[in-house]
Length: 121
Length: 105
Image (cartoon, rainbow over all chains, first blue to last red; front, side):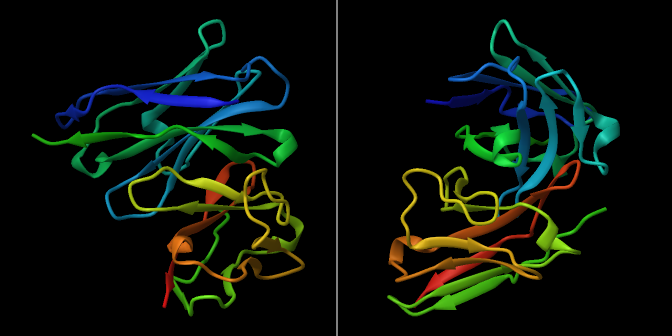
């Protein structure tokens, strides 16, 4: 059974750096074809994909946010980190991490419960 | 960049069939995935690779992608099917549609 859980700060001030941790179990991020994605959802709005990290360390980012995002992984600890620099109130959202697999066409078959991050001065 | 277009809302009578569409350039050549999201909950995948159902998803949920648009079909709609539905493809990056709110009348 695959499980994921997001953790990190709930309140940030503008210009600060957000770091979120996705802790997972039920799969290995060193297995060929496996990856973890980050998605966010501002209150009352649609899902927005942020980025994805593959088993081999390759990363892909939303082009509109690419300059502010970094995704890294620690395979031995089963965790993935999302870092976003220079946050703004528009970054207020629930942030999700999710498991993706090449066999599933990089669908996101398992999601964490999400963590609400508020950016306010 | 690749874009997916969904209707903002779809309404369907209780017990009838709901069809939610997802349009994109040459979408028939892509694997389309669908997610259901109820208020306050994380999204749940209901269809992957256009027409496959994950374990635990009722047979009432089905997908097709023989051309533009791709479609999620929900048969014999229940009140519990009221939710937002999102389509998604892989185009070297992940792309989501804007979401469709399904209302059961």
